[in-house]
Image (cartoon, rainbow, N blue to C red):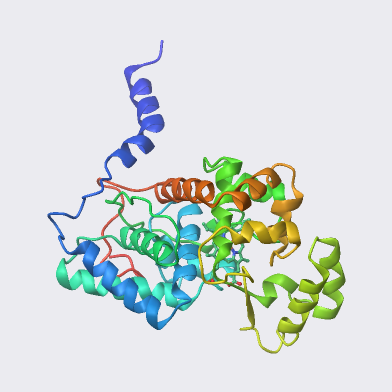
Length: 327
Ligand code: HEM
């Protein structure tokens, strides 16, 4: 016969994540920080106008923060300490553009002036990513609020939790399905590659462009497109900042054209081609390529799901005063 303590522990372990979510609400800051939405909207708009790469950068930052085991807790914004490198200093996160971090710092500074130690960095990141998605033409989704910020960030926790373009598709799919996403939701989320940039080093894997381009033909790249990438990236070893658009047709618009590019061999990353060559994911590439409304519907639902991963509420976590440091 299980003891009452065992039953309590069972209840706690299984239902705590659900209870955590249910403590979030859409109007969390209505009384404590009534100008919350307006302040974020003003900062996001001016930042995106002055630096148009901010939107895609922030969406990727949000993905990487939420997918890590400690969930959407802004732990990715924490700086390394002399004793331990943080998540943001892991190799995979070094390409996250400074503009995304800068945006959150600006919003946090404005919000600290208006409502000191009230609004979490994780809520700012979630709302900023959603607002920027909408600015690019993507779907709106309600962001539940009340997340608290994490106090732990270690580079070692990143390994195997974030997708890399060179991973086998089974490993990439697994990263998402073990966090509760269906294959359809994973494919929809990757539709975020309809915007933003990829550094040439991600395409050519720090190898010579000439040697690597033949491999691209085998990986399903359109030969003319592969030659175009070779030209655009030719000097990338000397100039590591060289980048190309993820969606060569409509690079700054959030639409379903990314999915139309894939069957034509116009994906930029090896993993983009993997979505089309894999039997599990290909049907969704076709569906989303044919039906933008469906893509938007599944994308919005999946972003909301992402925004709820591992959130801390109640007495867990803290409201950081600065997003790059614990209190
Ligand atoms: C198949 C799984 C995925 C892989 C392997 C992958 C990998 C990458 C890589 C290597 C880049 C280029 C980064 C750079 O060079 O700066 C990139 C860019 C990007 N990714 Fe993904 N990604 C995946 C899924 C996703 C998902 C699910 C989302 C969003 C929900 C996303 C959003 C983005 C965005 C918005 C960019 C552009 C970033 C920018 O312009 O700064 N990715 N991704």
